[in-house]
Length: 141
Image (cartoon, rainbow, N blue to C red; front, side):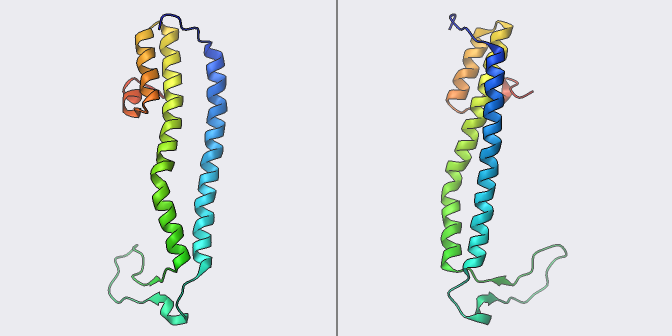
């Protein structure tokens, strides 16, 4: 790795662009979850009127949700299951973005300091999405 030729200002500029896009992605994902929740609530249930709630009796601790809950219809259940099944992919996507940004920043900082071995380690940690190693290296400080 002795042939690196990094332009730190260029890396910084690209990290800002990636950060902006990551923020846009976060907003889009939050909007998707909100829209799916609203769709689930609006979809209703497959049962008539008063049967659509499950009244439960008993004391409720202060600040806790009531025991009675509205019945969940098939559309709400399907949307909930979809989000639950997609959660690992969404989490992996967020971790990959974070690792790429932290790895690039750390590798560039180490390159500027002249520590090419640590720069390579940061690059390898980013490639394998090892956020624990990147954080141990001091990334993001």
